[in-house]
Length: 591
Image (cartoon, rainbow, N blue to C red; front, top):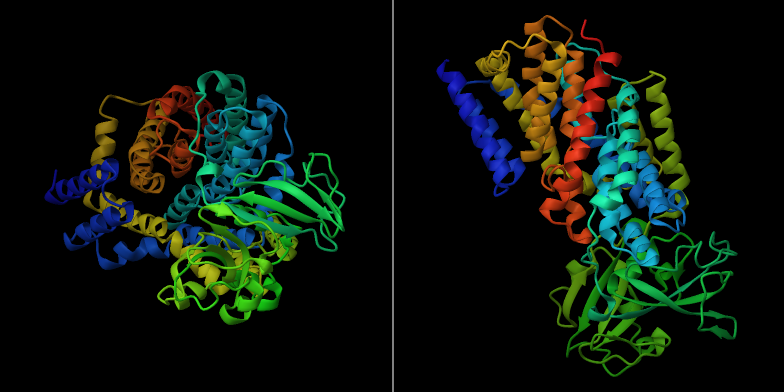
């Protein structure tokens, strides 16, 4: 063993320890490792930076822009609402949950899909009077399984595909992985529906309780031409909101206080809701509702410029002891008051007639510059923006969905590579106004740590090869006299799965890639089965909440403990291993 090999292996062990401890951010650990092998002379500058120009990593970055457009236009919310439907039993809920989640995850970032679906799942739990822990972990697993069905379903697939192209191996088409991914999805889904109810705990989630939150009285209107017109309250998705509830409906001169789920909505109906601050954000995402008294249309702001902000009135606010209408609040501050809360309790009645007092908390719809402009002014004691509160522009949802479908079809037909068609789709979404440049840049910036981890991991993978450490590891793995390709494939899959549970999935895939190709070379067989095994092994994370981000996302809302993941994750991991290792050589033969 040479000094370079020892040094590289020490760096790898160090970065694995740092990532497994979860005390150092993944991007910091990976960048430090990249700098170490660069300064140590294991790789040169070109090799160190090559990962940041890799086609797979660039495709991941571009797809973040596509995801931003689908989110900003409300296309994701619309698709999720349509596909989920209104199930009435636990089994039906799990079935209706797994199908749309896996479908969306096959084409969109898994984290985005799970983040959007969590409120819908919590709504189901409330309506069915059951614990959300029966549904939220299947939600995460369905997203993981769905992501394995296509090349763009998870960033790991794109990263490995980029590594293949760097080696001169032809890249995969978008649905090539479906030959293994779809059977795996079916097997995993059947297991979850048959045994998930017994293995999953029944535990209370950490859902925000309305009685402990600042309550607001928010009024919305069914405008002319609304898609909610002539729909029942149940079908419109207004029966069980996560952050609030519908109290009454005003229709003309008549007030309906006993609002049943089958009541039909009509154009011009004024709906009154009571809930936490996030209730207003939740209502914005329902296509066909507009604020009743906000007057945001008079602010002349585009959808992407609007957001929700909470402010607390200070002693120097110039409109104290005056009604909202008398203060000319909208003209003075370029913000529309949606609701007013006093002492943590809602104030009902028409917003314009409310007399403002010191300490009142106002829920505003305004521009993104409001916080920067007024957070240090004495008019308000506190200015707090609500996270992710920009209302979707539903009018462009069909266009954004159409562009996504065209992107998939063009790649399936082989006219363009995944990167080329993703760049074209992102350009069209920007050109048509489905997403703005600032919003696209913001979405990529939010996910920048993921891109840094991917780019730096390429450098570490190259260092393993250049130093000879990868070949040494291959020799150790095969030292037991493993001559069976099936056994070698199983070993690569299991090692990749183990690495994924303790470090990031992308880093695990990049580090194992040179080892997998080395094993294939030693056995004198095709490297493709081993490369595909890495793709599936790096994505099949079911055992811990730390192995995959979506598993961690549902831990709090579902009230899960570490042992809950092991109880259902171990049989899921065994099932995944058997299905994958059996099917891969049938689709990609060893010879």
